[in-house]
Length: 387
Image 1: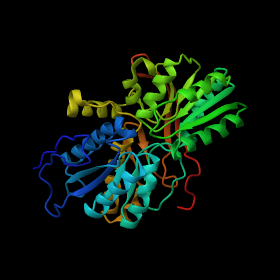
Image 2: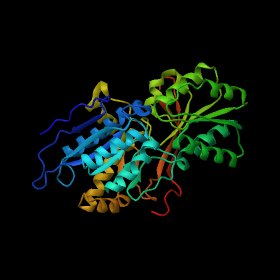
Image 3: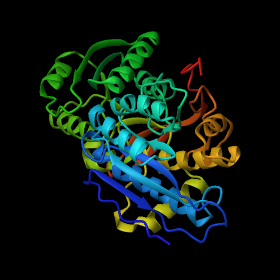
């Protein structure tokens, strides 16, 4: 048996092998899951929870006999939260490590850099992050939310509370601009007005000028869409310090990051497919298993890490349905399988995307999130009609 090594999140490259039982007679070659993820850069705040979720899923699967009787291991590579780092990480995982599948949460810049590599290397790819939508590849399936699922709940809430003039703030890359483009159109369709829309580079940290423009724009609500992790923290802290007190909806903050912000996050509206407050046996079991495995080191599970956990199980289901780890067989099986996990029943059956139950939440002073409303089985809309 091999014992999975503790992940050191500052390392450029890491790999781990979960504790495994005695496996069935036959092919004992491990199935390797490649996880390129932002251990450094903007996503470094959320990456540890994503790796923990992967480790938990692999531990559980190995304890139950693996996949097709084979042990499962993970190989983690730092994509530095951007395109250049992703190219290195994907090339290492796909061509040097020859992983069987890539499953990960990443920035859109990293994902876009990785897709051509998984296509060239002919690997299945499950993208477990929420994102701006309409990224399509025969090799890629998505189990995170898209704007059609996430934006309407927060906009409708703000409008119902009396907001008419909206100011939009984002990180200047595909996710930030894509989310706010959808938000702008949706707000205007509903009779609202956009009084400002501004962006900062993804690695930017000084929001002073943008917040000054927000203050003078006459907005009665602000919606932000930044790179997950560090930009959320810097923007929120500076917004609070500036004394701006209008309603604030954040399209990119995860629950773990909100908790890390402390009192600065109080009152933020979020829309998510996963919150720790979901009251189901599956979510309670998931939370308990994380706590048992990681103890005081456990990172708060969130809307980026929980889909990662489920994605590993969706891959398992596809391999078992296909009876094979061959890429063409797995890709054919992925839209036909489902997994009931912490978020409920998830199937990537709609143009390589997943209908999802969405939750409107409000961050509390202690960092927890109060569920305000839920919206079952929200369709992702037309994402990849040619697939």
